[in-house]
Length: 408
Image (cartoon, rainbow, N blue to C red; front, top):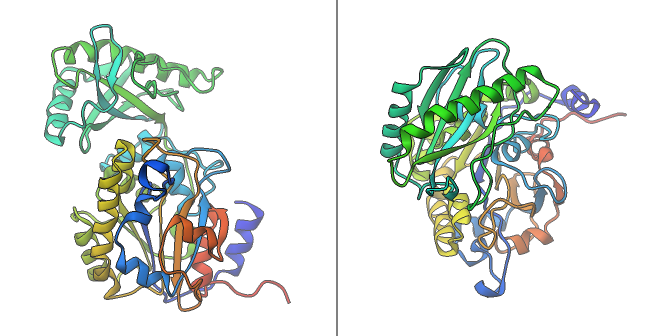
């Protein structure tokens, strides 16, 4: 715990306030000539967020540090108030937890996704055309039925959503992190697993097991189309970090659809609420659970998905769909409401970026920046300015009147 965290903890007061964080994953974007210098957020029809902006303040958040492009793990941990540099969690751990897998000490987890390979073994599509979940489940069953162990380690394989799945290596003397086998772009071969710390014998052992796993797994997929290969990312073991409730004295709940974001929430001790599949259903569950929790993390994936596809119109529509459902949540408006993203996913870049994401914050004590809309352009003018995402929770706590006065 840093000296500043200790101070926040000493100043924290009990509260009866309700706080809600809506994360439009990857919502931030950049304006280009091709879109008449509009971002999807600016082009979207968002009457409900526009109304909120009249009684809110805005700003932009640096997800990690200037110029650093975050993955979803660091992006969300920062939103939850954990320093994304000091608190490093492998994506495999997050995905495994989200799928309900209980990790044991020494387990090494990898977040994997099926890909397409050509006859030379080069990656032609890193996501195998985004195969349906049912196809992923069938392929995982093939692998799991044939591969129970590799070397000295037990191997567990479980399907996620779409093209994603997880692989757990359970054995003595293993640890991460291991560098990704994902080459990050098409036209390259699957990379070899290499320990991030070359001096770690435990990580080297884990890397050797992963490479051995590839040797037996890839032949089982060679006749499958389009998913005849797979890539691994975020290969690591589970760290020990303080819970959300310990840090903030708030009882938190997570309303997310995709396993990774459930896993992130579980990692910090949030209760995963299972069942809702659409943003409308998530907001309705919020209404039902309003009296049971103090803090609600509500995750919306599709802004990021369409940003990665470079699909401007689909990303705009996804923003409009969330805005259309927003009045459901506002039936029981939280005392503090923040709407933002975990990072930016600009359509022209077809991937995550370092650009600060916009944030809107509304409470009885927020005042108003007198902005008509919630957009990147408006956020640039907001009174929150540009700040590190790890301080968003502290802003929310302050607006919930959760801090005593510091000093005389």
